[in-house]
Amino acid sequence: MRKRKSGFFTNKRGNFAITTAIVAPVLMGVVGLAVDFSIFFSQKSQMQEAADEAALAAVREAALQGWNKITAESVASDFVDETMLGSAISSAVYSTAVDVNEATGTVEVSIRQDGHGYFLLGMFKSNPQIAVKSRAAIASTTNICALGLDDTAKGTLELDDNASLIGDNCSIFSNSIHKEGMKIENGSKIKAASVCSSGGIKASITDVSPTPVTDCPAVPDPLLSRTAPAVGNACDYKDFKSSASTTIEPGVYCGGLKLNGGDVFAKPGIYVIKDGEFNITGSTKLSGDNVGFYFTGDTAKTNIGTATTISLTAPKTGPMA
Image 1 (cartoon, rainbow, N blue to C red):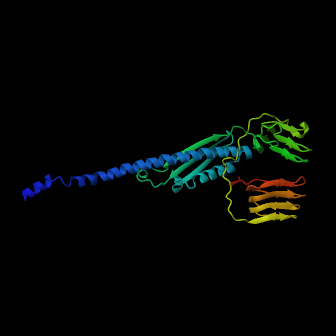
Image 2: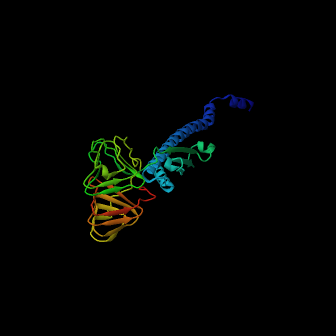
Image 3: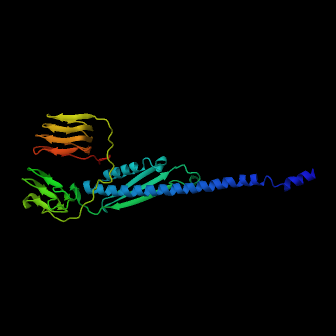
């Protein structure tokens, strides 16, 4: 018996199994923690990028509609949701907070992540697991009511045939460097807080108020980072036409939307003009609140007649706020 005990304690053939059993969990923990940290920093980077872009999108929106807390919150939150959709972050629980300060002209976006299923890190990192913050400030307090984006075309912004464009407390810009980048002809008139063209202006001095300024720096597209409304393959209306007073509903208008006469009331929502023309002619009077028009397809365009009257306000929330 004593010899057997002695042999048992001096036998080294089982040492490898015992050592492996002790070391394996430690190695698994080290590898798991390394993977956790890789995911952690990757997601933090994605969240910071989303916060940065959302804050910029919100201040660009202020250039269009002025400082509106509800609109800024909607724009930033929608941008964050769209950016994170389908990313690794979407499997976690995250929340967004938007702070708008009209006095300083800033928007601050905060994003926090909770409850991600880390291998080991979640045991040591309490909620919020990740928190990021970004602040953006608008460079100018002047709102934009009309902006021609083409930087080389003649008549990027053009009014003709007794048309008028009135911008109360907002500015009108043309980014075209063409000598006639902005054209106001044949009895047309522009009145705004300021009128500016990156190139030249063809107009009678009495038709533009205040006196227009040329050689202005181009204005970045304030809607560049906005997420477009979702457009499916289905059509709600096809080749829609009306020549009498009517009420129109939001939806996808395939082949266009044509109104020729009468009082037309647009219910709140988004009107998608797909592969066709938004044509308003005759004595049509179009009105509505919280209405947005989105154009998609190679043939989508707008034609507004000289005798028409349009009175619309934009949505305050959603993708076209």
